[in-house]
Length: 167
Image 1: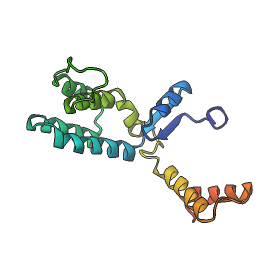
Image 2: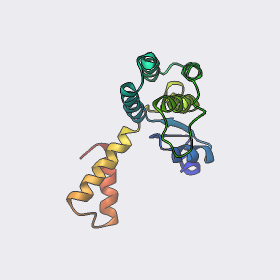
Image 3: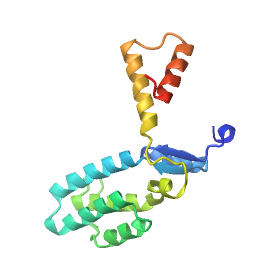
């Protein structure tokens, strides 16, 4: 598809295999904002209950950065990361402490910041892949309710309708 259709950007959820594919095919990769905000929001919610009061403002700042997506967000995340003391006593096999989880979150977000903002600087790139996921969802529902597709052309027709929003 990259060569045949001239694909230069993919918009996906934050699954690590998509990052590898985009790099191998030399594609720009936009991470779906819905998926990003959902997993980061869930992580922040869990950490809020586990971290002491002194780290609550750091969590609020991460939430603001994800909401605003400023161009320098990656640098601001690194500044937050540097404030967290590193746990050198952790042994392999032990679960990460809440503070270590926050460190990991900040690194992951800062390293992938450009992937969260492609829609902001490249025209015609959607900020979410929800249209694709909605089409997939309609296809799954159709397959479940009629016990699969009877013919290849039937599946192609359903895909066409799902992609156009006509259902």
